[in-house]
Image (cartoon, rainbow, N blue to C red; front, side):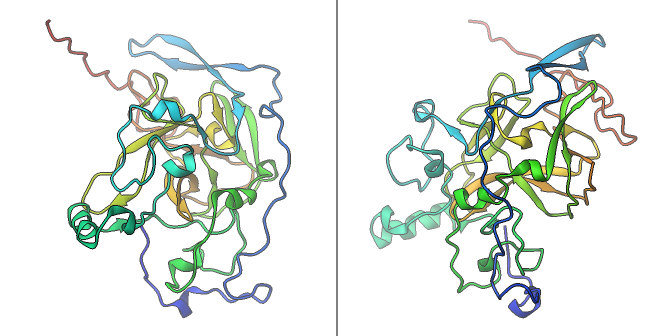
Length: 321
């Protein structure tokens, strides 16, 4: 969440090339992408070796060329049985991922003033994550702490859209490359020098209401508006079969990036964000978390490895009928 921590005067970085409140030029041009990701190895399957819970080695086959998507894949029928988030207005299930990920609410849709006040008393104030601005990779004159002018100027208008924001990183191959990584399938490497806090792009996949059987490429995300007093509902972005370059991030216990929730305009997204300075040629890695290492041993080889031994699987309890 964002807060006003400095004055407007302190936050604006003066630049001779850019006018006040300028988001700069669109960083990349729109290009047509082939149906699959580039790979120097002519295969659609790779063998990444893992160690089973019993200590034996097993080949873990995973697809390395998912269908390329430029926005979240969404099929409304899969959400028919899912619960409606608090404050969500309109038919359910929504017809698009944009409606599902909308973080805003119009109080007048809740009814009378009394009904609106009762709703806010029960659920609390509306909470929004930071807005990532007009373009991904934008070259603005804002402080590096903020991407959207409304984050430090409450009178400014935030009318940004996901479609425009993604134009900034449409030519992703200018700054990233997918390469084979021996023993690990494929990995994402940087062609650009990144600073801690930089947004590297969106994490895209299929938007689904429940965890899939294979959670290797799955990340949880809140759906609908979020309020201070109630727990937000969640869905999942699964990039196993549909995704973009961000899904090729391998695991490291000394990760230099994270997948985190953010916002563009009124739409929530999952973003890939640098948490360290990243050099040209460095592999982009995230921490897969303890759930991934249930019955698996981490092979990152780092001195501070968090999962040197496979985490014991939770016992399954079967109730007698």
